[in-house]
View 1: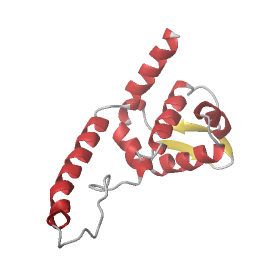
View 2: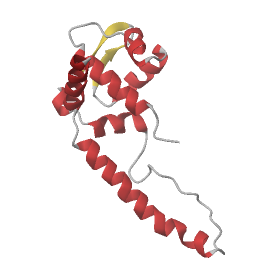
View 3: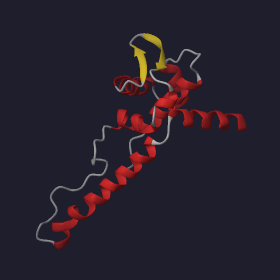
Length: 144
């Protein structure tokens, strides 16, 4: 199983808020773009609001970005919705057999690899802004 789709949906929501910043961005309207239930959108918007990435007011339509798109990195978005802490992206089984040479040593071998992989992913996400994603989306839309 991969990383939760909340991350991709959160990027979709934020890009939509940027591209449609002059419009009224309701959870129903956003849900149509994402092709999901508005409840899913409201839940993710709540996470993004808590992280300081969007402004939402319960019962009032019209979510807005809380920061400039050039200031929002994909790492911020990922951290806002993933629930994954440092060195926790990959989990290991906690009780391998200590009598087995593999079981006794597997965690010592793979945990540093997992940590390096998570760090590499986070380094890439930190270098990409929502502005870049929005510009790419506008370019793709014009090509159609």
